[in-house]
Amino acid sequence: MQTYRVVISPEAESDINDVYDYIAFEVMAPETAVRYYMGIYDTIEKLSLVGAMLAVSQQPYLRRLYGVDVRTIRFKKMAIIYNIIGDVVYIRRVMAGSLIR
Image (cartoon, rainbow, N blue to C red):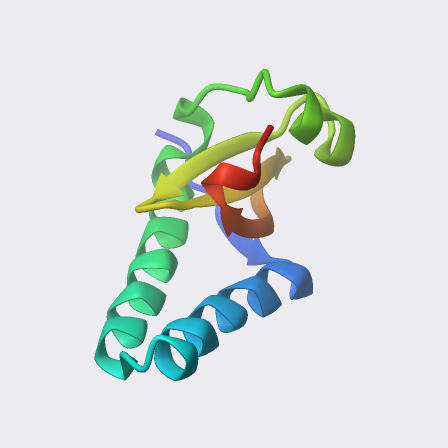
């Protein structure tokens, strides 16, 4: 089984931090924010093993923005959007799954 190196884009890092900030400071649930934050990173790390096993997305919106080989994985209500480039899983964005049209 091939393993991949995982690289997170600055935009995805910012997305993750925004989710953390929202839960910790707007919802006022800092412990939940930490668990959610860690869950997102755990899911991203799993892509080093299973990234290529997930199907290429057929969503026109995602394909237009991130290319025809874009893939997603879900963590709770969040969609982690990524591409595989050679031996790298490149995390593009982390967004609410409801935003994917």
